[in-house]
Image 1 (tube, rainbow, N blue to C red):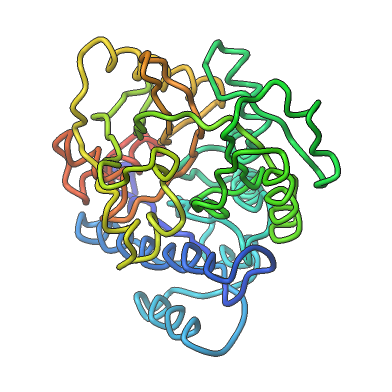
Image 2: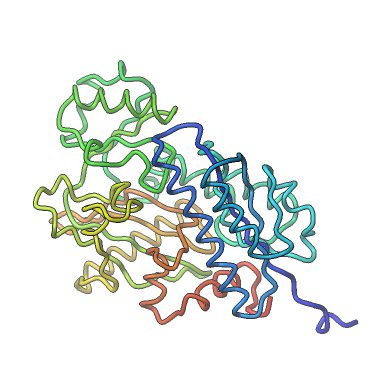
Length: 367
């Protein structure tokens, strides 16, 4: 059989699902469970495009409605199996015959599992979508990411890291201007972010740092809060291409300190925040500012070492200065998520977007 006659490799849609989380707020499990629905949408899109795609979960735990969600995912394809380890989960799918559409984010909220999964895939010889483990580890550590951005001349809000609330002193905060926002140093998906994360004085900062350290079992990043417009910039490809810019519409919030993409705004359907943070894409932005945002996003992509696809979130001051607040490797690819919103504005159907991301890894749309 010639190479032209060989069956193209299958596609493993690898994702995580946890019944519990080991840290954080109980509601944070909502974000973890959303990955299940994203994986099912990706697998279905690939199958509609004619690819041999299977769902392969990395999962833990038993009992309750969570297992029902897992069971629903497991019935999506007869070859699907679950394991607690990426190495075990992929045993039936050798890297010579399968590529991986990597949606893995780790189990139970463990830190830096995203990077470990990518490193494991590379070590096992798989071609896989999304950023590599090095880029994921850089972006997941917000302090490290900010240092890398600064080295590339990318503006990022002034900041400080606190391991314990007793470290919060006037001296350590002297280079910051209140209000500030307090975040877990190594989380994404707006975990730990709500109105209470914005604080206006030293005492409130200390209290919020104490909450983050105790609840999320990690250091707290204290960052100067940038009052202004917020943009999400989706990027993909090699060479990198910037998709149409998206802006969060905060017009329903009179108080500028409430204009944030909180956990509720991102995940809790029916809440005021969720219902009143629509996103406009393409964003209404003049050519000069659009060029500054685009340049900043590309520099951020390069600073972190992204590949395949990523999203850069930034706040814009009244003077038109973009401040990068997050570089999100492997952002959510759900049909309702921001990355697809930008791809759709660029003329892609959902199926075309998923296949294009696959092609960025394999080098061919005929995988």
